[in-house]
View 1 (cartoon, each protein chain N blue to C red):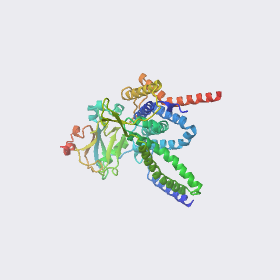
View 2 (view 1 turned 90 degrees about the horizontal axis):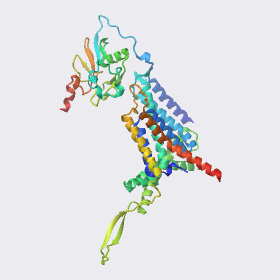
View 3 (view 1 turned 120 degrees about the horizontal axis):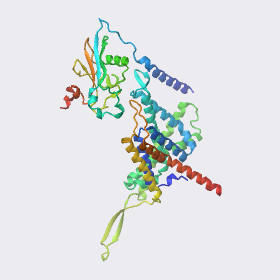
View 4 (view 1 turned 45 degrees about the horizontal axis):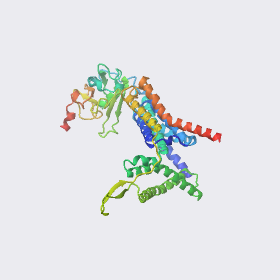
Length: 184
Length: 314
């Protein structure tokens, strides 16, 4: 019986650790109602999310995604909007805050799970990587340039312009030429 | 009397393969429910309601585990229920988990029916054409687990009779079961070796040399050697009933897969639940596939009733 009590204790301990590590929020708690107000002295960045390339390849889209709710007719998921830049914010932090405020669905792979040590954006607004073939997914552009590292590694400065764009061809259709370099 | 077992092995193999393939490929809840319920009733008819009920907790636990695991890893879907560690747990992911669980449990139950219906002799008969070695290995592999379970209980009972491991502590019991299990493995593997040795001793799968004198040849030394494989004896007869079963199975297989690809039988869970559209084609698929999945159970029930009736008349 002693052994049984020990094992019950062990199971209870594991459960306690699991429950302690789980943070549960309701839908209302998760989506931010209020976001930092822009004051004259606050630093800001502009963020936009677009999926124009999806419209160009609309025929290849799975039927379940062919809906104006998932692919807006003008390709704009989030028009250029100004957000307050907090100290040390990366591209990912701003995107996450914007998505939680604008109620945009988003799924990402955490930095601890990625082999590159950076957050990877799997899907925004139900448009996922590989939704339009093996070369499709989300990429980001800062002031017109595609940075060569993950979005949680890129620290933003005041006044920068961040664009998230959906590519169907490993970046070549949105103007990122370097993605194909290693193959050539 | 097991009526469904009396079909020809080829028909039975076509039946199981077609139902399993449709079950593995479809995401349509109607087809999944038909396959799951049909297989469960079939297993109940084969092994008795008691066995089915005693196994039910295992199936239900596996079902719940599979269904609940999916929303932890898949966050797609338009209806978030709550957020866990910053990730949405959505209704769509939960329902997709239920669909996955139905596929897994349905396939599991159907495979148990397969093991019960397709006895070693039928598997040998079917796979003989491909390769005698392969057929023997296949029949031994399929028999492995049931034999392991049977022998496990035998060893367990013997140990208990000797008064060993009568402690009520959970950890003691776990230790006891592990010990019994470890003793099982070499015994069962040894059995496989013995089987193959015994089959070899009988000349299983060997060529036989048949010597024939050449006609009109006076020279006795001039003998023609002909190589011929040994054949297996079997009592299986292919009747019109078997042909009908094959036809119905292939029909349901064909229209299900065609419907899945082209005619609105397909079903999507992400990002928004699809709608079940009732067209002529999908109604036909539901009806034919339903008939195929429930047929074994109905045949068993009919046979049991006939048997009862005959017994009552004696």
